[in-house]
Length: 227
Image (cartoon, rainbow, N blue to C red):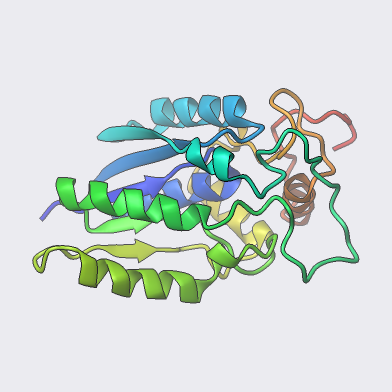
């Protein structure tokens, strides 16, 4: 039986490496991308389009989740809410860039698509360790979702959520991507900008730290050329 997999492709570094892993494990790839009014939506869409050209998935689906913008509650979307710089002294609280239950919304959509096309797996580049600490990136969350999917789909439907990098450090993720020839130049992590990455938001900070630890130069452009 042909193994089919849906990969949630945000355009970020983690989802990029997840694509590379899924490609090793499946015969057919399907890419799912979501636009929800995030401040870097333009750049993320561009990265997604480039990754489609690079990996040639069997099919793609881009969904409009602008209702998340109407719901609000996150600086990642709200233009009146400033995205803060990374704070080394505040590692326990959930950052205000957290989009409430975003990954849950995405998994639900992916499950619907998977049941229609007969995909056996849904891959998501969630990272629990060495990350921003979003609650919808916890392994227990995906274990619970797997149970819900099993109950809420047809008896003959068998779909598993795969989180291959959930316990990896960011530097380990980069090294995996390097081995699998992942095109990091087609990924974007900055929360603020669509042209030059700011280098100081939480996501930029974690990315730059990881590239340095992995002994590699980040190929994307930053406002500060010293990166």
